[in-house]
Length: 362
Image (cartoon, rainbow, N blue to C red; front, side, top):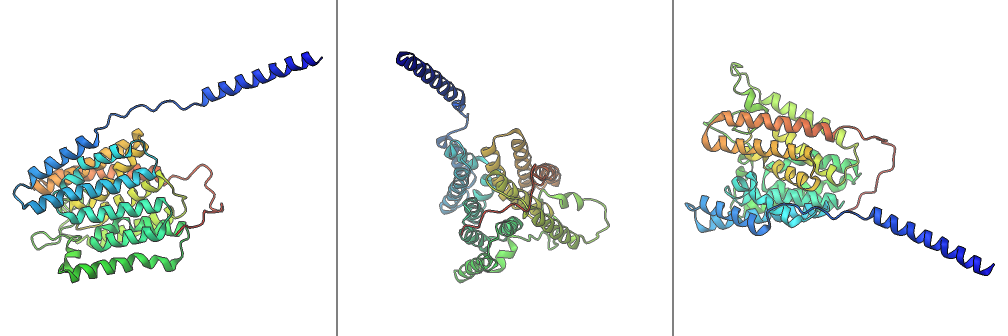
């Protein structure tokens, strides 16, 4: 009987071991497919050669600032990609150097665009880490550098409401922005330049859109008899932004959904605010690249191609004076915004606002 008991135990142990091995083999993750992306050693030199060739007429210091702007934006994008657990984040962040917003904006304009976009991306990285004080510090510094950082204000407001961050801490962002503006004014940079970077005037008349690929580019070419529409544009921006905050503040954002919500806020503000320059879409260019490179699904890539095409057409319209290109870009951006809104704002399967929320981490 003892021998039979040993045989039975051995048979049971062998069966259990076979099932464990089979289960481990079945659940073993497949080896990830190698992505065909250009390495950093290819992307950055291409961008550098393009910028240097385009700035030969300028001083060497201007070319250095252009290259520094590309590196700053790429490093900020790398910080966000790492928090999204993206495979090969360094190789993917190098693609930012080849985007139209970096080549034509942060690379060719000045270091100003690069600094405020990088600060906004670092604020997004802090939001992914649930470090709200750092998030407000970064966004406040971006707002002090350039008012276009206000494009993601509805997103940060909705996030603060959703995560129940104490209201007394909300003042960090405006205080930091005021301190940044005061420092720039003390350094000899006029405060009026802060507003001029946002509201661009052409031919002494404030146009509804200055080649920005938004809906007002289409409206201003219609035969409306010179009806002033600036007030309507501002009212539409405030109304849609308020609806955005009301809806997003009820969602539990994290990871890719958080980046998508920030992208939607940027597209809404750039698409509805009047008197904008094509640089108003540059932050959306960066956010849509981050979303597409991290999610790697066809829907994200379709939205990314539309946003990048719209931004490039707006820049080309501004450089060439062909307003028709900006109208085509506006169509691409409006389509991308509607597609993204449909995916971000749809209710979850078990959307229950009474569920307990995670406490805010500061």
